[in-house]
Image (tube, rainbow, N blue to C red):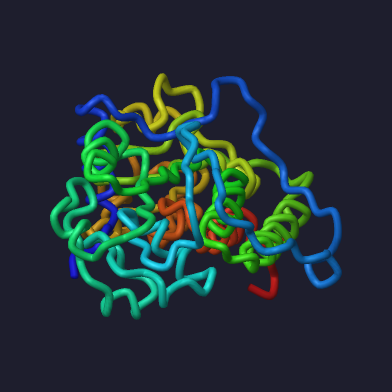
Length: 323
């Protein structure tokens, strides 16, 4: 099964931008949402199960009406697939996009086509009563599926807190009350990270998405993770969420930590050090060029907290001595 890896992620983003789609981003100047815990998950009162019929608002602000609890669900994005499996709804998943590859059990599910352009005929063939799409599908795929009388919800969170809220939203839409507990436990882990890095100096961070130096800019999902992990994104003043920097710009920024999400393209610490002028970067001299599993930082699903923890450990190893 094809995998959504580092370079593929960038290509998908750029492909979507050429079609007029842009990833969900926070409004410029909007403070990052913070984690809040009203009570420990173990003592919090569990919510009542969703009552159907139900109308829920998706991430495009559209009202999605569900007459009954969905029993046949199609996911058109790896992040949505991971949410459904984390919520224990795997038995109701009847189709996934070709890029969905986690957990391994996903391989047993019918393939309804490419992530960018799923096959409407294959989607219809599995007779879903709910389709979970992403923002990439908003302009073309969603209208096409709705024209076939399918119920479609777009899940497209712009940052970490919105991702946790989306987990709860999917839980309500699928009649899975355990979603609140899943999100609560993830918020507790986020709070642990934020407490650990509080007050620490913020190292300059370059997050490399591809060998041609695409990175995460302001109001992007990854920028949120870097900030929460106690870092300062060197591309935070770029003019778009997913900019391409020049080698000279990176050298001028002199990052203290370089995080590679493109190591599967053959990029490693040695390759970074071999670039003209990069051997003198603070990150290279200090041996702080680290690799991260791209899916952890780029898929807005339950594992994004794993990504946050990895980034935080890379930026502040002294704050996580037992890691």
